[in-house]
Image (cartoon, rainbow, N blue to C red; front, side, top):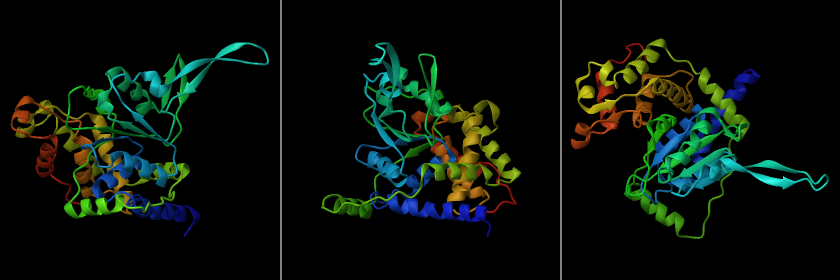
Length: 333
């Protein structure tokens, strides 16, 4: 085995270790952890939705410890200003010359993993301050551009209840999130284990598994995972079928107000590649596309009033589309 192949093998072997390390603290939530790791490897950001008390903050903090990355939590509130997250200039004085000058004081956005807690509780002006960081991995202040350290990973949370005093995320910002991950209540057995683990004196020690450099290597590896052209077409067909004006699928025309754009197709292929790599494969299967379709399309398919009245969700539309769109016959999975 040459050195390059050995490096790849060693990196892939660390992925199960990473998840195992996080599970020292986080009980259950296997699918959520898988999707967060997929988003990290694909180089995108995650929007997490779950009711209070489901360990969203703890999950992100534990992930940052297992990755040996700099972590910052930003609590989004109605009075939070863009400068509170990006940073601001402060007036300083050179004690040698007596001259005064402005120095940029970096905000909490300058870290590797950012927990944007309750992002929908801050006004659009502050939410929009994240857009440049999420897309360009840099921020601009007073005409000066400041690059952000890589890897750069935003995990934003929002509460599906208590919508009073919230500001729904604009579609343009939602589209910047690679995945929209829903966190459900734990099972009875998992909840009992949580109660047992968190009410005693024992505290788990998290050891770092991956470095920043190794994560960037894996993000490059994801792009090198092969995907059959038939699967590229399959992913494109799924995305195109979500558009009411561009499909012959009856239920889409009936329930969908606005479909997913090309970024959804890019996200679907990239996350399918990352999922394949997490499974120890160097090629995408149909099952990878199907599995990632839900968190990729969940926030990009906008339902109309009729769907809301009939309690039809975007996940249900995705499920029906996966049955409707013909799968490639030559690809296993």
